[in-house]
Length: 300
Image 1: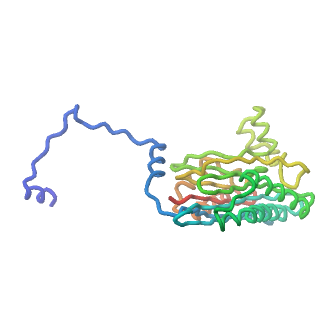
Image 2: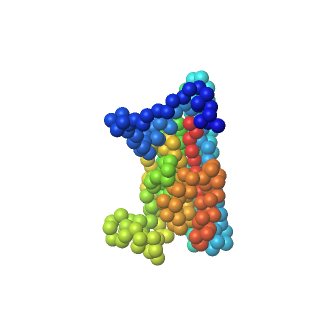
Image 3: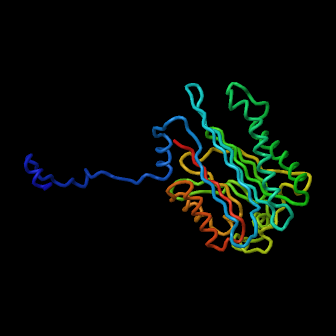
């Protein structure tokens, strides 16, 4: 039918292009594609959408993890920006009140940040008397005091991301992790584990393969509720524009490779599907610990 239709309009057979007139085509790089997506038309207001997943695992009797996720969208002619706060805390296994420690840390940090940020969210002309990093530090200090009082002798990891617009400030203590995941399964860890084995690996005394099976891989040298002086890692970085932010406890990353994590998130149909698939994969790998994960994306 197509050939007959062309003939009705007197179409003529075209000659193939000569070698000197053949166009050169070069596939776009991942970076070029990311830039094109970032510059594409988007709908205001931008907002952070997220999915969450959690499981007790297959070898624990109760859940000592705690997660917190909040997203607020503010849009208007003069002001349009998204606000997000995402937290993963993992109560230290083998200690009394591990679940109390993680819940206390997450809720205290969230409450402190939201209380300080509330006037600015309601009235953008109101300025804060401290920087975002200073706010994160004071919130972690408050969480440290609260954990020490609520669960003496226990402890917890804490990885939190406060995201405002296209910048995120991360506060981190312990061995829960934050990852930036880009399209097509590329990504990198944003945080460093405060564990004995990770420190030995950084010093070159053991390999990454040895670290993965080391008998002391769960021993932390820094955690909330442990010791009077706390030195959290606090830094600010751009939010992955066309990608994802992933926060998780070691019940996920210790049994799944980074490449596997990145692939599952990048290929999932939506964020909740990504979280459910990650939790299922961790359980299929034995589920030796509690599993918690949050995946966040900035709409464009």
